[in-house]
Amino acid sequence: MRGVSLDTFAETNPAFCALLLSANVSAFQDVQKRPLPITLLPLVLPIVMSGELDSSFLHTSDGTGLAKWISKTPGVLFNLPERIQAGLAMTRESLQFALQYQVLSLDDEAQISDLIPSVATKRLKKLGFERMGNNAHRLGAWFGALASDAVAYNLLGLEV
Image (cartoon, rainbow, N blue to C red; front, side, top):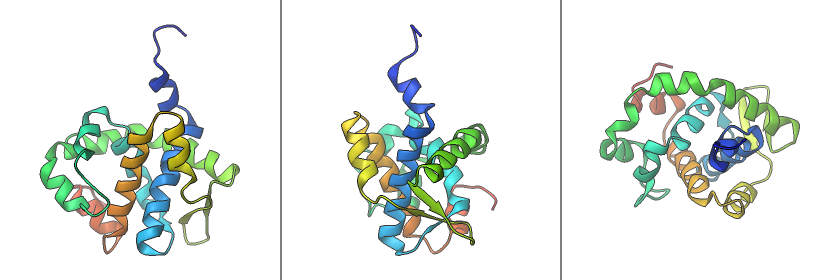
């Protein structure tokens, strides 16, 4: 196990990633007052866990908005489809973990609800990943401020 950082273990751990998803879904729910469409979930981990994008969240807030963040950080669009594709397995495993341990729930309309609001960001802070948790939360708030999931995909240059 030598040579592998704690960050690498955390970032490939479905339980850890489930906390990031929970923080994102919770923020979306705070803004929209409804569950997150499952179609937005594959976007979360590749953006939030990207070391290249981490500093782009500095000096942002829940109110910044996705469009403004992208305009200030056009690099987010670079290789995004490939990063999303590469992150699908971890997103799937993390969602399965979150559903099994009742962190998140999935309804018949493919909408995801956070069952433990505000717990995820506190746990991430305790684990030393406060900034990543805050980034997941912000991204969820930005998604929540949009008219639809299609708008998020459009802003990110992706097809629904």
